[in-house]
Image (tube, rainbow, N blue to C red; front, side, top):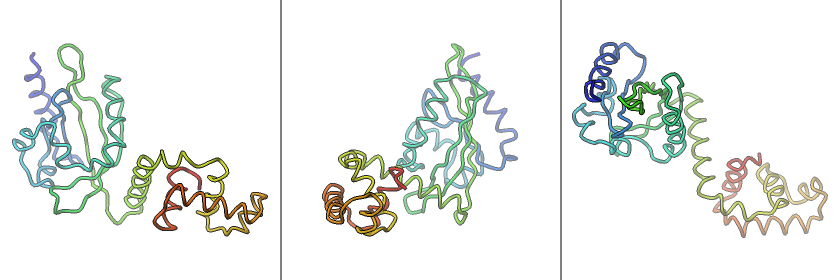
Length: 222
């Protein structure tokens, strides 16, 4: 059986029951990085058709998904593909929208390898993406964590310029402690605590006090 025949057979098998699943069902072709199938609910949400999705090829991902958080889950997907086993599943949150005029919507996605080609190489991925209630605490928490991860990637080199003592002081600043409180806790003079505060601000160049807190959270100081 050719790859095309195997794909058509597997797509028909999944499509026969896809409308019954509590989520959008997508079948991705690993070798082309395009879409082979999406359930009707997904096509409706993305305001598109299956031929249009197939025509996008690998551009499908940039067209509908937030590239900022894709950097967080793509390594997990490629790790699953490299394992090349049909059993394991990986899960992640992702943001999706039909067009640039709409707000991003959160989905919780489960993904597994679905089919090998004739040579045993990974060929198809099966995804089930379930929408997350935007008002839920989970969606809000995921948004915050992803923003912190993105901040960490962009500011890692800057944060690395801080000394170990400056990081201790930054932690206390993020907790709202004053220079006298920091000095007492770290057994420093108030003048030394103030010097560390100035050095931290010179190195990090925060626009607001809240940004100092973001440094502390993103780099696990608090």
